[in-house]
Length: 299
Image (cartoon, rainbow, N blue to C red; front, side):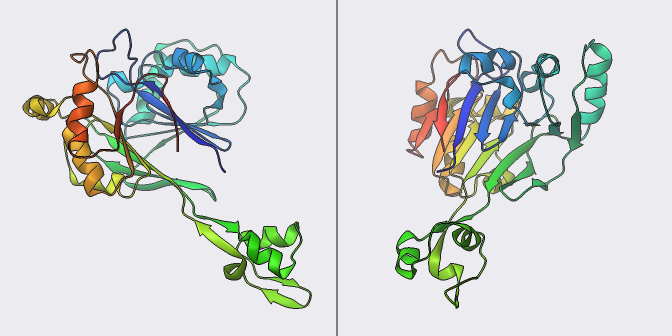
């Protein structure tokens, strides 16, 4: 089974607390380490979580409010001082390249990383044989995107079928798994008779926003939906005033979009614990939990 794990590095909204760092979570998948947002103190949270910071291969920036990006200078400085190999890929909304230029003008970096910075638009902005990354624009006070990680479907060997045919372990099975017809003992053998398809995992991230249509597009059939939940539903007017969502709205999205699991994050510092927010959401969507800093979730 392919390892896929989420680690929540920060679950606070604008103001961190003694228990909650600024926003960010990390997806560990094969040889990729994808960081969704990079709030203040993120590099220390990596240490606390026992994850090498050099595991980061991509950073996805939802928007440029401070609580989602203030950790970038420190993280990049530390990576530059580490034995970091490869190119750090950074994706964010229009204006990201200009803001990085301003950051490098403002701070002195002893070593520069090899970096690729791209400004995303709606749609798929990265794809390889294993997964794709997709962006949808949200409705916040500044240009903001939510993101979808979609793993490619993969084929598994039907052990009983290949055993019956007498196909030995080795290159032939590899070709069948790659959806190629093979010849064994003079007979052509099709992948459809010897393999089955495993649907790829989908992880969705809804960052700061009011409820909008693209929330449902992001969340559609997600195995895990990570969604901002700044306020409980009794503060709906405050949520709308600041362009945020309530825990109940997040649950409605999960329910209507056929998500499997909902994880709430980005909590206002008014909440000493998240019980009210979790109960508010579970009244609509039972498979809900509130993230806490350094929480790990296997997907």
